[in-house]
Amino acid sequence: MKPTSFLEYIEIDYYSSTPKYLQLANSIAKAVRDGRLNRNDTLPSINELNYNFEISRDTAEKAYKHLKSIGILGSVPGKGYYIKSVETMQRFKVFLLFNKLSTHKKLIYDAIVAGLDNQAAIDLYIYNNDFLLFKKLLENAHEDYTHYVIISHFLDGGESATEVINKIPKEKLILLDKMVKGVEGEYAAVYENFEQDIFKALEQALQPLSKYQTIKIVFPEHTYHSTEILKGFYSFCTQYAFNYKLVRDIQEEPLNSGEVYITLMENDVVVLIERLLQTDFKIGEDVGIISYNETPLKKIILNGLTTVSTDFQKMGEIVAQMVINNRREHVENPFYLTLRASL
Image 1 (cartoon, rainbow, N blue to C red):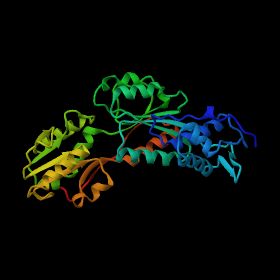
Image 2: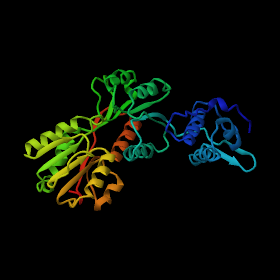
Image 3: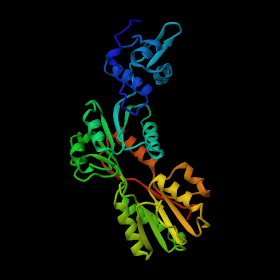
Image 4: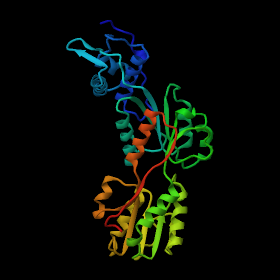
């Protein structure tokens, strides 16, 4: 087994949210795929990786174990690791750009990873709803990505997002969660129909809603959430003769019997519950709660929070199939009402 020059093939991006062990493994797999590493070439020891890339031994070991599990690496006791096979399964390299880390985004990420089943190297980046960081990450992205999967949500500056996104080759683009006006060409998208989704979900909840007089939606002044949600909410309340109110700050809002509260932000539902628990109101009878976006914990909080939510796992599964089959279509993601004790 001949030693090979190795360090030049490895890329560790310390700004990426992709685990470093996967970045290391993906770099080696790419070098194999590109013919820069060949069968029987030896790889550096765990200690050498630890020294040269400032990563932990656990990270290096995890990367090598991952490559062994997919058949690329072999090992010989006392001699180390070597390239066992050059038949790598990785056909795709995906640039995944999320606006934030959350339980919902993890569901999407996990579904994409499972759906691609070792056929792709995935680089995950988070821009924290900051447009300037979003722009910088895309401008600095390597050109060898086969797909760019992008969620476009901003607190400020989002009006320039179209210009940035239009620079991406459309055959490589998959928009996620929402459509972006002005994006040109033939590209893929998995999106929510925010106005229609909230309207139909509330329609399905008409029976339990009928015992309340007023529906309040907690929608902060500065948020990345689509204003289409408000349009659907107003249409429902008008059509079915509910009193309604837009609440910007749940901390300051008077709480009254006969009201239902729709919360979009996780922090807001926590504040609302804390305040309600200090009153004599019985949740699900005197006041109701509907929380946006399903999570496992909402099944058990207060014996169950009613939720309205897109199917995040399904969204990730559709993305994976779009990558594998090179589909360029626009797919509306399913949206569900889950009735529980809080309504």
